[in-house]
Length: 319
Image 1: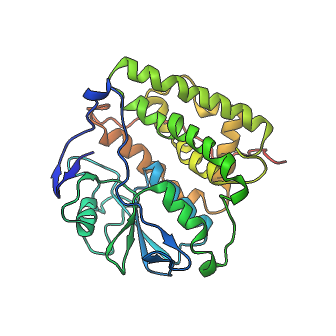
Image 2: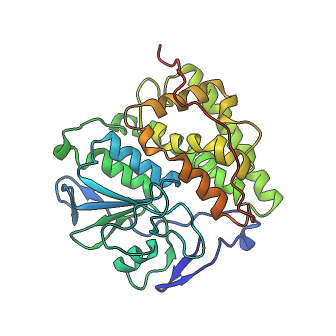
């Protein structure tokens, strides 16, 4: 994944030489906020915002999930990049099923969206990108904040008041979100992108500690926070759905598969079977992107056959 430096593209992978071989994720550059009442420059309005995603990317996947859960599909348009992320980063080539091209501007590259917002920008070109058609700029490229906006800012517009981050659970949700992010959501990348044994060892232990902890927690609770679905579950799901097909082999997270955890495996199937969620999952893009794009890990770009997983098998949870 390259980056922009003062508006100029540099095809440079993550530099781990100064971190002992450890992968360190960049901080999102755009952190604006959409509000229901117009108290910011970005008010919730139908048709005003456009979402750019990769169907392969777990961070972008979160935003697609909340777009579905909160009935925003008619109000926020979406485009999906090509699954191959090579020397030009994410592109809008449309010669792959599910890759839409840029239907807003007809631009060839995701970095062109960043440059449209700021011609001198420096930073990684990541997805998701939430674009404001009125102000002609990026609202946010931070997935955790985009899903919070989607969770509540458009409720008056849609009439959908389902709250996946209720105020009374905030204090309980935050440390669990943080643990899952540090050790699992980002932990799989810390394993896969490690360039030293020490960095890999430091990441893989906590990753499986968290999976073991979740397995035990889900033996007592239907969802991570109890009997109620929350954003914790939907932030976790994109990592779980990718684990056996990508992270287990490609990122060397191979002590166990999700299939080897009875509660986690059933829980993942339950979330997949939740109304409208399956259509946010594109395993073709997922498998293709990771194995074809990461030539530092898979230099010959061999696409593995992968397990044939039955996501529609009865999950038995809540029966």
